[in-house]
Structure formats: structure tokens, C-alpha cells
Length: 69
Image (cartoon, rainbow, N blue to C red; front, side, top):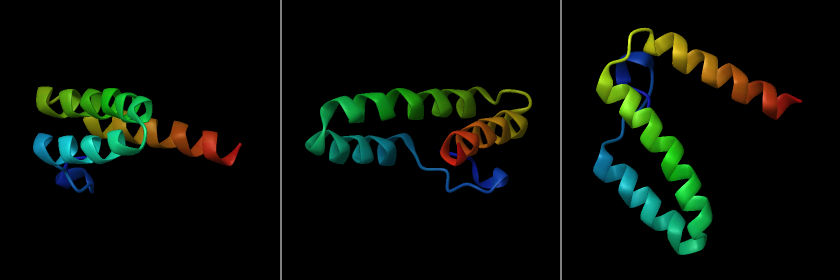
């Protein structure tokens, strides 16, 4: 979901939906939860929010802190 210019792979909406479909085959509630998060990032990317790289960096730092704690 992260744009290529920020070092990500930048998947399309179609590719994201294919991932959602595979997740849902295993666990629908997990697919729904992940979908909400992915669509939030897709929306931010498409809206070209000012400071996107800072926003994404802060999100990554928060996730890393959760994993390490």
C-alpha cells in the first residue's frame, strides 16, 4: 500500500482485493479488519495527503514499538 516513491510496493485496489479474498477464505473477521486498515491507507494515498511520508513513518514507528514491547 505504501507508494513506490516512499519505498513501498504500491499495490493496486484490485491486488488488495485479491489478498482480501484469500484472507477471507481462512478467517472472515481477520479479512474485514485488515481490509479496513488497508483501505484507510489506500484512501490516504489517493487523497495525496500532505506529509504522507511523515504519517507513514509515524505509523511504522508505533507498530514497531508495539512489537518490541
